[in-house]
Amino acid sequence: MTKKDLLDKKSMEFLEKYLNNASPTGYEWEGQKLWMEYLKPYVDEFITDTYGSAVGVINPKAKFKVVIEGHADEISWYVNYISDEGLIYVIRNGGSDHQIAPSKRVNIHTKNGIVKGVFGWPAIHTRNKEKEEPPKLENITIDVGCTTKTEVDELGVHVGCVITYPDEFFVLNDNKFVCRALDNRIGGFMIAQVARLLKENKKKLPFGLYITNSVQEEIGLRGAQMITQRIKPNVAIVTDVTHDTTTPMINKKINGYAKIGEGPVISYAPAVQNKLRELLIDTAVEKDIPFQRNASSSMTGTDTDAFAYSNGGVASALISLPLRYMHTTVEMVHKDDVENVIKLIYESILNIKDGDTFSYFE
Image 1 (spheres, rainbow, N blue to C red):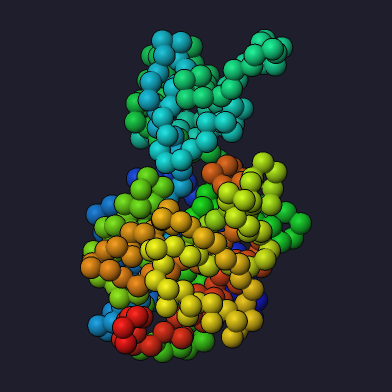
Image 2: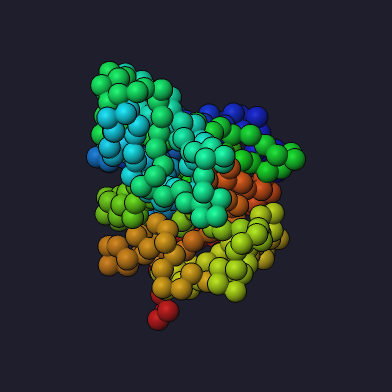
């Protein structure tokens, strides 16, 4: 298995197309279709559910079931109110950051197609320099070039339309991937690469592998809560992003230490089953995969929590990809970390045995 296998031309073309496609929470299906099309040659069948989670299955008849999981949705906004002057006020769909909104371009998704707009902001000349008002939900508005509510209505924009940023994928300095929504469609990409490696390296697993791309993580792990009841797995290895804490204004004493380029982050938390976590660490050491550690306190805040506490308890662990500038339009990850997360999941799966309970009492 070489780096060429992990991020070759075919996989990078898919990654760029997949990231550039809008997939806001509650509207993930077009992205899921792209993901399933890429994954199709590497799995035996698919499972989908009512809200759009998608699962590629290898060895579907096996009784013992292992999940590898990422989530497919990105943060966004909803149209909440349209003023008589034709300005649009918003509410969050997930953890959208009001402070980065001013001067950003947006796509408003309507039945008539995309309507372009901008988050406006008063010019510096007109603001009170002694007491500047910060951006907040009450004062950020989208301008679509209309002067009346009627004009906005005629464009097909109404309360409930979802709004995304159009910022697309690019590479910085040859090894940094930048895009909105790396959180966490990069996770869906990485687990798909694991399935591809298993197929191309002709690995036969003694259990069923469920490559799971869940929806609605950004508003409370909802997709994972639903799909785990459908799959009823024995083991779950979840991948998500975590904060690079080496940029300005982040307190390492509170947020811990992680840095892009230094490897996957393995989490410690009550939801993380200790023996499964140690299997990940042992695998990383055995295969010379660099890794970092993170303590997540009472919860991980990821789909790990949903899998761990489902179905009477599922042995679950979390492998995170360090990321800068989370929930902005310039989220950034290191190419080497992407490769090493793929490697760690792939090699860890090969170290799981059919029927492993990871029980403390055996």
